[in-house]
Image (cartoon, rainbow, N blue to C red; front, side, top):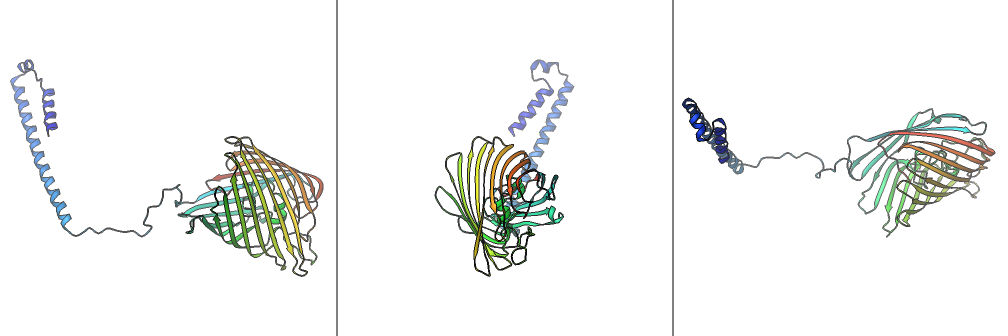
Length: 431
């Protein structure tokens, strides 16, 4: 209120000079008007004070009635009792899934005669990928793929849910159809792998397109000090490979190339990783699949892998990686077991975030009873445009003594051109 009277006095001083000399020069009529104006403002202020007092009194009365009366009911909505984390935080659920599209274009510039895609550059596979965190610790991934071999009919390549909180520290799991965690490359989509052509051991002994299964698996992060140790066990249902060898076996039937088992398959993988220093990491792993073929033969696939990574700078790195696979088929009639093996070793160097140079050696046979194999030495150059788009060249030279997938030839030279493009916020599992 003192501030209000000070403002009124200030207004009076501004409207009429406050000095004695100024008052002597002011006309009597003007002074009378000014006095009347001040009196009117004072009356208005008193009226406002009275109204304010009445309002304060009525508010207090209402508050007392509410306090003395019955409690006001509250509305409770069904749903979680705790507020979910904000979008983008760990465990947050989103109303819209992350969506991405990937295209894998391949062209074989130099191949042996008889290759259907010889000297052609065209799209090999198109993927539509979705992922979303549906609850705290629950994430779904789904990939619809359309391949050139199926005339781009779209089908489900992967569709599974992962769980990271199952009541036991370090215990997680997955449910659904997915690329199985066998070795370092089988779980990776072809456009996300560091090679234009899959290593021979995986193409002939596992599956050219990757072994996938529909089922359940549990993974446990073992409590081992100063060591990353992850054990994954599961049981999945697999189907026969789409890559069927045209050459008949001794019974006159055709055999699927690769793993070759169908039905329920137990699986397992142990993955170990240790930091040797702040810039170097050593990884080792072992994987196993077992099942039965349609012919009744028992089939087993075992793999071992090792990877050494070293960061040279902020974006430059070295990586040396090798895998060995052993495919065993036990004939249901004779009971004899036959084991065929394959392996590859690769060295990759990335001087920056855009370029990568590689050297890879492949040596693999075909699973029994098929004959032949492949030995190739490849030079690889990659130029990354974005995080999901790149150009890649892979020049291979060596011998191929089987027509299972590509024409056989000794002393062959092949040049494969790859262009991968992608857009969207979906992230693929990496090595």
